[in-house]
Image 1 (cartoon, rainbow, N blue to C red):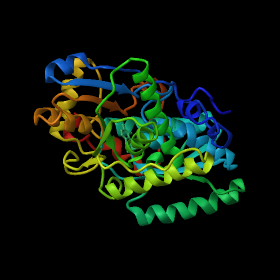
Image 2: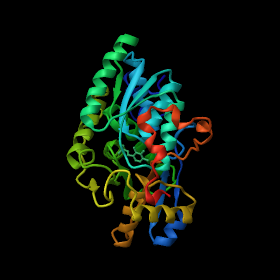
Image 3: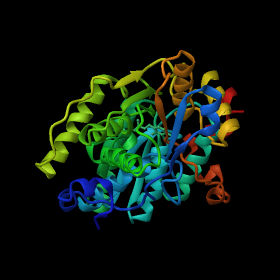
Image 4: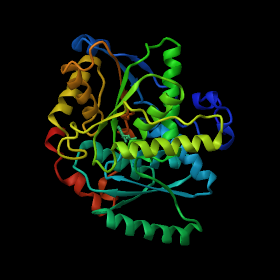
Length: 366
Ligand SMILES: *Cc1c(COP(=O)(O)O)cnc(C)c1O
């Protein structure tokens, strides 16, 4: 059922007629000033905290899945199939909430550096009943996907519904168009002043693009600072512009009163905080994690949010944020999943995943 309290539907009620939404996310998420870190840095810093977007698992993917999973249901799917790295938060969130909605989940995963969070996510996905598949490279993923299509067609009478990596299709991005409108409502209500810039980690860009599109549509002045944490193929200006325009077009197709807006000139992708590779922690990220934990008691991680905060803190240091109001968008799950995986042993996973439990975690995650 469409949830008419969503800011997206409040702005454009006609969208509720054609775009299904399932309120799996607990919204709005809190926003507040980071008092300690603001004092330490001499800059007005705020947090938009998506760590508890859902009761079973939080983080940014839950907002996207609120649109993606009902779209899969509407299409008549029994199974959703998605992609990611072995420790993908997106794949885990998809497995958990697909199950809640009566859908099967298939995860097509590729290698990544070992971390504690990779182990937890794999166990949690298994616990949710997802089919976990490991591939060494994209050619193998393509072959494996073709095989899954044939096998599921034979078994269930239908092809699986594909959700792209990170959930960053126009449908998924609606979750962050809505999030931008949600932040606007919080600013309008006086919870925080209007921000000048929003810092966010960027993997497949859906989060950053949705925030930029929502801001343009609602005439919000904030600039989106996307901090790239993965290969450039997934996060670059051209891809950002394409996703922005495709999502704008999809909204217009559903409600012709929605204007065409332009990909903002001041949207910026930062490439200098990735470090050596995706999911390999950097000393700067670990230091940023330490600082926010010490000042605010907030726990981040080294793959996404630590790197994004490291960029923000470096920009403070360089004097780039003097006099600015800065929002740090926390995209990381903060729900403790340890009890859910208490009784799951990694030997129950397909053998290809055992190495994530048998090899040591990367040095900066110890
Ligand atoms: C997936 C993810 C991101 C990146 O979101 P995109 O929309 O793919 O850019 C950022 N932070 C965390 C913790 C994530 O899991």
